[in-house]
Image (cartoon, rainbow, N blue to C red):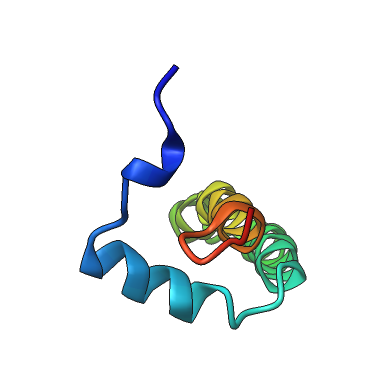
Length: 80
């Protein structure tokens, strides 16, 4: 079995992790909920295409939240 310590992150991944770790994880959940609420509001006002566009933002926000959590738990600077 190969040791994980021998692998290292590149400079871009390290920079992204450092910035991402500064954000609270629940901000992405709130952003997803806000996009769904905005989408519903747009749908009520008969803005179908815009509602669909904004509604599709929820999934990427949730994925970013998962990435944020993983960075905090398993990031490049995690101590064993």
